[in-house]
Length: 592
Image (spheres, rainbow, N blue to C red):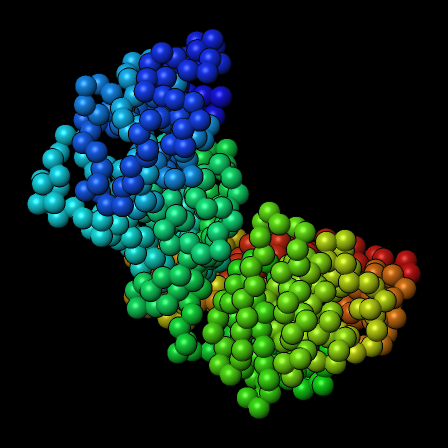
């Protein structure tokens, strides 16, 4: 039992003692059935640091209490070598508290009262040594160590991290807590790459404390009441930092080395600029396809892509393209971006509760609210898929996003999967689905310092020859990111991103026709993919995108010098693999 709560140096308690109802010392002052955990004196509330009992030292290290528990239970040594437990209310009579009492009773007697019920703020400060041993309260007050100042130390550390993230235009924060290392790293997802600046190598204990403070004090809709580094957890954190109204979508889990926390950072400023499809990077014929789709009376449109591919940004743009005279709604978990002239609803899907449909109330009410268009933030389970189907089948415009490896695989692999469960016959019904999109984001070469193939001496002849042979793109038009960067693109602390200035959407799009739906209904998935590919009538360096894969669309932007071809390989696979794939497809066509 002890090893569940203590570290590797847990005190060696004899088996007979750990099984006994109470040792003589542990039973000091006890009476059976007492409401205060078996002790005669009721627990004393601690609403403020000044309410803490005098104590000579904290006993974390003596029993090597795991850091994850220190945020809600703190053993202390009081006068005359006695001990007490300062803890949150829900920890009274818990297994942790009982085991602590047993362990500490071998050296000390229990104080009266033994329990001090403290707020989470007090517990965090105890853990961080914001409250020092052997320091009279008057000195603590004189030094200005009030709750607000102590909290600000943790918040300031988070603000520093977020300030850097905002400046670098980061999409995600990664707290990589490694329990066996003195310091842990904070990573930032910037322009698609995970960067770990040296200046954000933080003491492991401090990063753990900051994480617990954020979850315990600032979280909303948390999967648990208190931070636990050993369990998967999710929550939302809202904050005004660096002049921005931000929402952080928290996901954490235990790792082999400690704990990994990832926070998606979403800007929710009402005045946030919304970019056009052209500004996002969509090509002219793709923009025309979008306009045809949103001009339809009803039916569904799905945008697919991996995490961090800009799907939500595109969805925001599409909703703003619809006339303000329409009744527009979104259903999201949570609301990510503020969309003008749109009513946005948040739903919360629990990690643990699989028996309830969080979309049920929205599903019942939405069609009574006279909608013209509805955006479902993401289809990721039967409930969200059911809501999308309900909207699309009822003749309204339905938009959503999904994780899928390509545009056509959105229907062949994802929507019909057991996880989502939309029947094949429903999807194959004319008018149910209008448009399938798969998009990704690729870094843009800095226009001020990008280099040609002659200056890029690190690029081999074989590499240039393969691009010319496979794609028909001459080497003289290729441009590469400058690893030295320039004043226009250099960012402090991010040398890995020198030579890059922003990102652009690359996308493949399929407007479903009767032939495609018939093949899909008859489960002719290979024939369906071949038919889509047959729609391609243009070369790689030509702008038309019909029938092209996202890699092939990317090569058009490579031919214009916008993208380093190595970024295309990094995202979609090597050109050598693509060449082998083309040879295989050609062979199959000849056999057919």
